[in-house]
Length: 209
Image 1: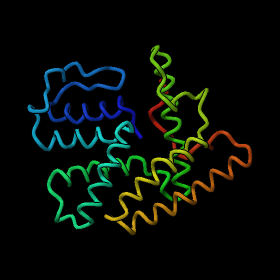
Image 2: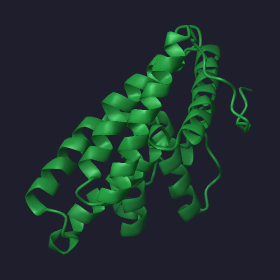
Image 3: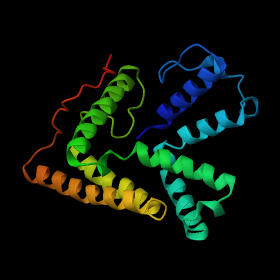
């Protein structure tokens, strides 16, 4: 799951690789990209940028609605889909993968949840230190990670895989099974009075500095 700032950063990185520009981050704007317009980039680069920007959660509801409408009209025979429909499919697939950790088996789900929560909290720390408004769910002092994972799975991940199930039924049905199992695991954690996710056995290398 990415904020608009993260998605823009990743899109800029793709453009920078194409144009061989100096690096940039979410906290150091890419001033060298000011002269770049959509028309100055090749079609494949523009498509990649659009697909990456589609991972911004602000696009979730509109992307989900557009995809659901397309599958209802066109069905699961991709040979009937036009190029723009297939581009939208690619955008939806990457978005689905980007938010898929609650749809994975519990050990992977819990580990990824812990890692992404710490990544978000570190970004929130940096936003606060830079006198910026802390992004929603990124404030470690006011966020309940376990409840957030439950809500995120139910409101965002589950509908996404349900929408994709006409195209990839076997994959999505298994993912939805994992979603149900993982929500039950989180419910038991809440019943035990837990409020924090256990540390992942892996290390997020981003750090909070």
